[in-house]
Length: 207
Length: 207
DNA sequence: TCTACTGTTGAACATTTGTTCAATTATGGT
DNA sequence: ACCATAATTGAACAAATGTTCAACAGTAGA
Image 1 (cartoon, rainbow over the protein chains, first blue to last red):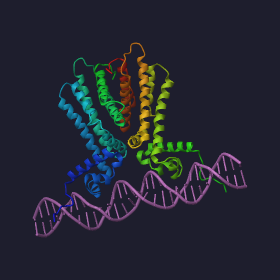
Image 2 (cartoon, rainbow over the protein chains, first blue to last red; image 1 turned 90 degrees about the vertical axis):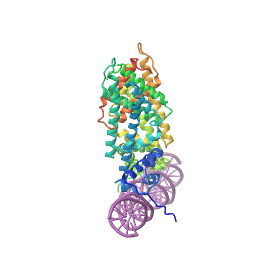
Image 3 (cartoon, protein in one colour; image 1 turned 135 degrees about the vertical axis):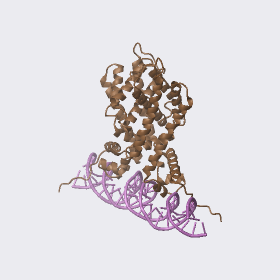
Image 4 (cartoon, chains in turn brown, blue, yellow, purple; image 1 turned 45 degrees about the vertical axis):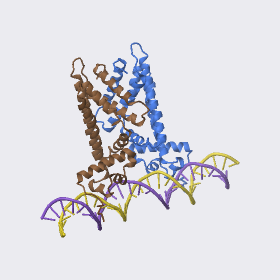
């Protein structure tokens, strides 16, 4: 008789990580319909009860999943920017390329995001996580815009508003592409953003 | 004995309209949590069974609600533009003012919209309604951008991409403000968009 | 090898969900 | 005043939901 253990014990940290990843997979596949504890536990290969053992409620698990996805996505584009290492303008382009790559421009991510938006009002943790990661996102943009200005011949502008506007344009393009990829091609979205930055550094904006 | 009738008969058209409006009120108040047939019928002052009598399923009712909200919002800003009646540039500003007014920049509307985004993949009707109304939205922007160019001294640009970019910026600003109104003031969003158009007509964009 | 600890299980429970349908009743036409 | 039509009701149903908890079992330390 081979004694195959019915389950493997794991330290809470590791198990929680698995559950978060399973949650993101479920959300990516079916959106809010995939968000039941039974579906998640099946995806993670664990029993139903384990979720409430590690998290006070399902919402806390989902909040943890939000935290992970938001930081992962930001880290992804930031890493691309660091790797590019060229001029400030080239770094900005690297950011755009990352944003319009299939890694981020992905309908699976919208399915997840929509559920988070839905929760952001009810869950304090989700809202705090949004505020924090979104501020980080804009700070990254603002820093890159700042670096652009510190070059001769480039006029100054309101960095904060510029970052907010560029961030909005990126999000808006991302959202609309996910809702209907036929509206425009990723390269076109890229071009729209590049043109916006070119216009900004040329001093055409009164910001 | 006063014979107070237990209900009032109505033609399907009228009753459906009431149900759609009740659905939008429910969604605006509690988002997806307010989307149960019991909650909607209570809000509409009707019985549970009446929904499935007028609509094959709940999703069809929600799709009808999407159709109404989307067209209502577009009509609202278009009407403001028509009333302004000034120069093309002034009409564009009227559009912006409408967009950043409390009529549209409203967290209640985001609660509704998030539910629709969630449904747009599953419901063919919702997706079609989105594609149609969004195309109308962009067409309106494109027409206004076109009118801007037909004036002396204004350089030409890719109207389609310009409309997509401006639409994205508007949506992105709207979304982020609804998620966190502390990020920026409506007037600041307005200013960002005005600056974008000024930059566009000044020929700074390579679109 | 034994023991204590605790990660893990899954049946059970109370709610809530969308839909169905037979009975009821308002209402316009005759 | 009556009837035929169909709008309306609400109990009933099956399915799915999040949470609880007593029992189980793997695992590290003695």
